[in-house]
Image (cartoon, rainbow, N blue to C red):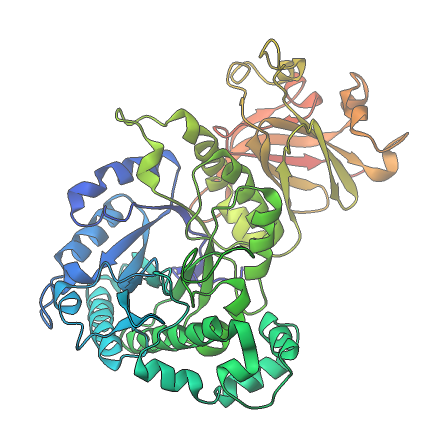
Length: 538
């Protein structure tokens, strides 16, 4: 598996949750988060580190909360991704120390077109950059000292959704204005010309394809956002570069996404690495290992479009933030199977539990999906980006799905709730006695992993699947074939096993199925984990 995440020099798939913004001011505030992470079978947690907390006075650092977080993460047998809330948090400067906030003459703010300073530190101010570098470097140096041996911390997010909020597309200060009016750096122009498929290139062509000139000359209406992306990307690259000199750990930047109708600086942070300026970021922030979209889009097309845009040859898809709603419980399987995601997290992990520590009804679908997925991580790592991982997803009104598995075809039949009686259809009778009362009332979803020509691993919930040789099927390739009482019995299994993977990735069988429990399809449930199927060679 190609990834930036490693544990014991082996590829690692981080699956977990990000705590709420203010949950890391004290270790006590994280108590609910640990319980919620256990509920989803997480292996990783994302927790902020606040600049204002670790450097309350300039040059005087206090890393006690960092040490406590690392220690508690180890106790809960998790890996940790720290989120650096420094110069930017959601396009503002809210987590900077008071000595930065109270000294605007030294630590310059972004100035709007109307000459009004806003609550955003300017990326054109060296004092801002140097102060952030010193704090971030001190943090990295400390993490190395206390955690290099255990490697609890597997990555650092550098800033949080950086950019400018507050109504400005760019900084209009004197320093920024001079840079904006200057020639676009030659390395940006050359990179753009070498990447003719990029959005930046197409906008440059629309504006006359000038070989030289200012940002306005080359990019017209988009000049201000492009300029800001370049400036912020360069600023963050410097922070990452200095940090890696002290502790070479994977670093990424997350993105507050935008649609075509959104306005930079108003609906999303101007200069953040949205799709339009993603290439500028890749050409500028070379010490950042990947750029990660925070995807809260619910509809399938929008979700898949963003996955596709950030899954590139030069950028692996990692989703550090996503919602806890039902749509995401389906979409996460798309991200992994169809877009080769290398990790997946939901935001506000504490929100899945009620005051009694039980999973809230609205969170049950996402919890079920996480449980199912957590059991298959060794398969995801092994078969990542091979085309052997297939998503099973019940779209609205869908009762069946057909999946091409090479020599075989998988006929998926989803469990249905009668809209009038709210009773599950008779297919449930094909489950064994343990799960007939536990059938998911949520949409069917999961994965089918093809480990060999006749070997399959199936996980998820709300469906059953029949596997048939394509050349042995008589009649049209219709899923209605699978509803016949006799024909499914033609499927000849060597074995059908429930089980799990141990710490070394070896398959451990916990239960075998045969007869009625396998004749009518391989059914799955999140509580079971993975079902392994081996077919007879015919």
